[in-house]
Length: 160
Image (cartoon, rainbow, N blue to C red; front, side, top):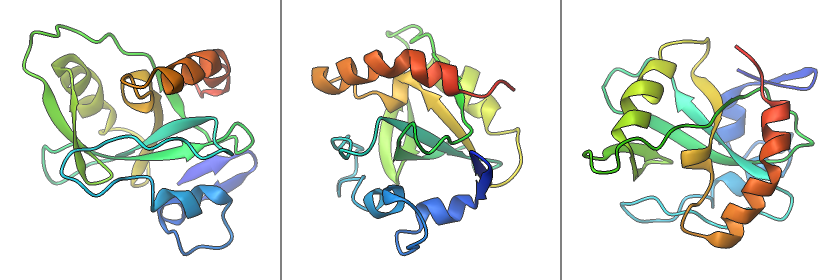
């Protein structure tokens, strides 16, 4: 369950593009992941200010599974912010799944953060903002837009 300024949203509703009661988030989610084996970012919809990661909790496997969704400051989702040290870039990168597609992260982010974070909280997902995942580091326009929003992103994050 994810709380959004005075109202609670079932996380499944966020992932269900057929639910008409939700804001544009649900309409855009279905087209947010391209059809390929490897994850690639799509441009944020005009209404969105940043992306959030929904980390699947307590998976039956060691595989880390996430969903990357667009969000806006008007939604006021409860999320935790994590700025993560990129770690040793010469170390073997680890693969996670984002929207069902492979995505490489540093071993540091994988072992020190994601594996631990998925073993806490309640419900099916943990809502996070992680700079190493939510910002398209290969796109200077997206990166500049997200960096400009980082102060507000951290300000709105929940402390746990």
